[in-house]
Length: 398
Length: 140
Image 1 (tube, rainbow over the protein chains, first blue to last red):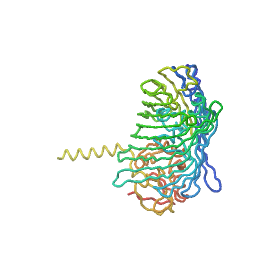
Image 2 (cartoon, each protein chain N blue to C red; image 1 turned 180 degrees about the vertical axis):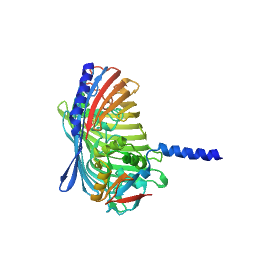
Image 3 (cartoon, rainbow over the protein chains, first blue to last red; image 1 turned 60 degrees about the vertical axis):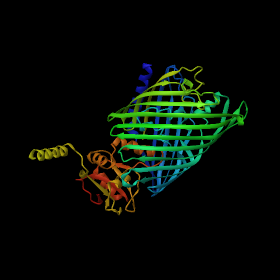
Image 4 (cartoon, each protein chain N blue to C red; image 1 turned 90 degrees about the horizontal axis):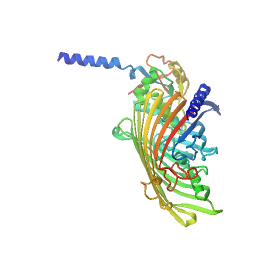
């Protein structure tokens, strides 16, 4: 274990020393337009006791199969019109598997401060971090609270192919500002994501999973300096097409919605975030021969503090419960109906572009309802009721 | 009564002495193409938080300094964020495609030079800096 940590720290330090002088955003001219190039990447190491976690074999020597990279180009075309695209690739245990995806690519026309339009493949604005969940350099934590932002299910709601209408409206009498986003589009899940992988254990191989999603997000920058409050709503109409025992198999949404309430308070070096998410999911399974009603409740409270210019620390409590009528998981007090996670993190910024994080997780439960929550039967022949985890991560951005 | 007045003056003096940074230490400057001559502090905040891209009908783009007293004063007075929070804010927009990273330069002289030659550019410099070739915006 000491050897692994030593190697990880040595690799992080070496990488930082080797690459930091060249880590600067690049710009070039294309038809008289300035094009900016930005990128990010991270490498993680995860070790657990109890269960294997996040489709990795984490309980023996731990796993380094936690890597992601992103690269984007963007440019203003005319005064109010911008264009850009980002490619993203990752490997997380059995997920991702280095299949690159177009993370976002769109045209953005901001007619007024209070009215803008985006069209193309657009990051979905739900809650505080859905659209920025891959960007771990923005926050103290190595893993966001997994109850609301499960890294193994990242591709589920992260983007849609369609459009947004958005804007910011100052409120009268110094009542703050309202940001709104309304969207509609098509969700198209990766076949290398957590849900598709989870279904494989149950004998279903998905060829496609996705469909219409629409919703909105309103966030209020209150008159209390640093305090943000918001609410998001997401409705989905999904279909999964694949095979089961060699025969065609279809899964369809009967009803699927998510409500998310959130608040954030930032004061000097202190940041406190909290969210509550409720998802109800009624799906018709196995060509109409079965039905699953799933009910998910998740919330967390997270706090972080910048102790020194380059050092910050944080902690959160993340609470997840889910039921599934099809899988007969109805009692959320049992370990297959919940994951309660206490996490504590330290972050050191080696320089402006490079950081190292160390995070401890103390988890109760392994939740196996309608969809996974970090723990998969493929890596766990039997489940322990508790899991302690160590996550070390180093990341860069430019 | 006399003691109270003396105490008030002393308190004011201590406050002034202990506050190293003031709005008066910073000038907000713009390229002459920007039609506005005066702006509100809310306008300044909106422009530098990439919320607003026009002032007085002119398209504008912010330019920042990478560090220093004027930068710290500007952040404190107008944006209410420290430098690391501001950089995180910009990166959250850049990596979700919602904005491009604003131009940032090394010092006052480079800000003035960039603002002078770039249509719509709005920046800030220390009060003592020469602002030849640019206009100084009055902040209400």
